[in-house]
Amino acid sequence: MKITIRKALKEDMKDVLSLIEELALFEKEPDAVEVTVANLQEDGFGASPKFTCWVAEVDKQVVGMALVYFRYSTWKGKTVHLEDLVVRDNMRGKGVGEALYAEVMKYGHSQGVKRVQWEVIAWNEGAIKFYERSGAKVLRDWHVVHMDEQGLTNYIEKE
Image (cartoon, rainbow, N blue to C red; front, side, top):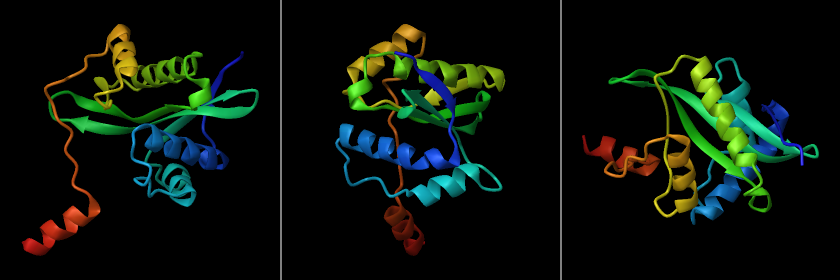
């Protein structure tokens, strides 16, 4: 099986959205995805792209994707945030995820960042073990904090 990793094209965003939705199901959040193909196309391929995305292809079919963007760490400086790395369920365990992961790490290195950072759900032990084997540090004492759109509105209205 030949895996091809390439930069995503605007036309790939339908497949990318499908992978995002598959990830949401995997993470037991099937109704959480609000982004659309149009959002992805505008945000990734407009005048000021907000992310970089790669897709993995097998037999000319998109079977995985990785999406990153730059962040700034007050402790380290320029970093890359890996938002999602997703492989279709039927293609897991075949090297697709590792190929995408390697592409992201090479990209971060080529950009001179101080670190690549991402989140992993606590019960995804297979991914955690892979990340640790690769040399990544899983910071188990930290918690992810989000303020959603409704929370923002409620907070601002209280001010």
